[in-house]
Length: 324
Ligand code: UDP
Image 1: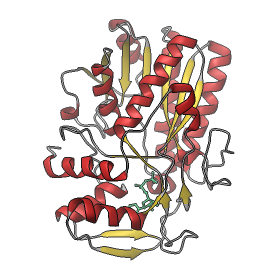
Image 2: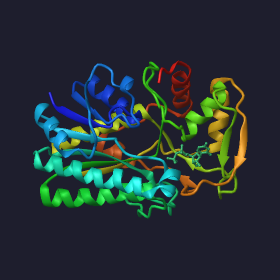
Image 3: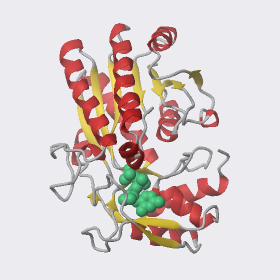
Image 4: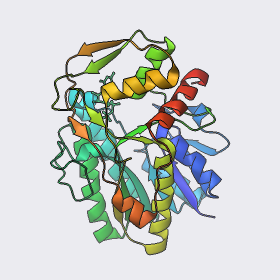
């Protein structure tokens, strides 16, 4: 049985990946400082409270649990915040990650799955973004993730550290049982905010920009279910174990929906009214981000099982039942 350390495993995507690792027969150990993550999201797993930048603690954990691979989810992820507070982003998303990678190299842990992002591409020059699309990020969040991608290439050449770079488009939804799901404080992400407006937890949803060059003026994004992302992590890990090679994959559904379309879909799925307000553009947002995930499908045999309706249904189920 392989042992996988999931750094940030108490967070949104990390906790779903942990659940799937367990279902697929891996031994997952969760490592999280709980600055953003939730203890309740770690269910029946070994848990170590620790910081990404704590090399000593990581070295001890690598030895104690005989770790074969690391999945890294412990990042700051908010585009708008990264524009306002870049120092925190460069420190957490680059400096501390390099220290994690060094701890891996020093302790002979050879495999790394890295959560990267569509934000590394910047404004698209093609309708759908494949792995070959130029990477020119337009916000500090995207810069931090791109920089680590470059570090990983050099660490592979110099130290033989193998990595799978997974560039998520817009992660959304929750596991079907409603026991774990998306919970950020404050919440800034589109779908949870829409659903909080539907449940009455907030008054309305602001649409950030209605003057983008898109069909209805609002931004277009590609939503991909968190379980579909989790399955890609496991497929990428298995491919890395098999081939001992680094690789990169863009993960999205391949279909774009505008902010306004997502709101309409949420009205239909929830059966609730949702009040909207117009608001100025948010700094750092590209108009359109849609994935070309042909490579993940071909090389990993990856499939997405959730369309936008299902994504919203699972997120709504979570919103109604959530305990954290
Ligand atoms: N958005 C919005 N209102 C909100 C939150 C988000 O209009 O209250 C828009 C945002 O400007 C972007 C899209 O929804 O165009 C997705 O934003 P989110 O923060 O969910 O994800 P990101 O694309 O930044 O990863």
